[in-house]
Image (cartoon, rainbow, N blue to C red):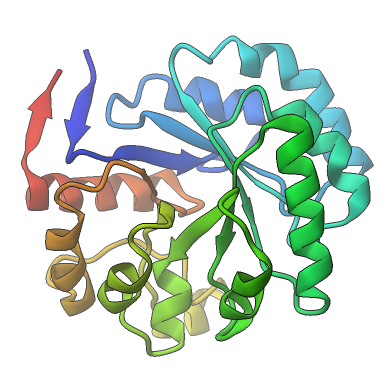
Length: 241
């Protein structure tokens, strides 16, 4: 029996506890609210490749339990085609960060991979302007991943961004920011748990009533993700299916 919160697919990253891809999947398997796992490849070096090779058959064994997405390396290179080819039959889509330089070259690469492997790509809003710079070079094979933490750090409205790009958004990285805590613990200011009563969240949630894409609680701690799930459940009400 699964617990459904809203009409979306609720997702967590493949690093909510210290360990490998397989160890995180084993941990998340019992978390009934989580329907999807984002496989993280911020880097793709020899160590990550060896880990993926070691865990691959076990990852495939979770295809009935989870929807999978993937986050490709922050600096996307032609040599990452090997990773895309492996992931394409498994994942719903791949997240990419827009190129700082040569957005047209990156868009060309994504178009080639989409045609070759049938993979869907979503470009994430990172620094102001980068996503918009890519748009003239993108076709229908590339959608949008909305990251609320990035928007909040820039002083932008997640609700406003969603309304502007709602027809292209296939995944939302839903997390808050906490600059004060980051100064104390040395962590990132974003990728922080949701907090009840945040004005930006209260503005955004009603817009997501009929959103059927992926909402990824992109927090690298199960305690923070679990606290955020409770806030979402409170906001939408739970229904069991």
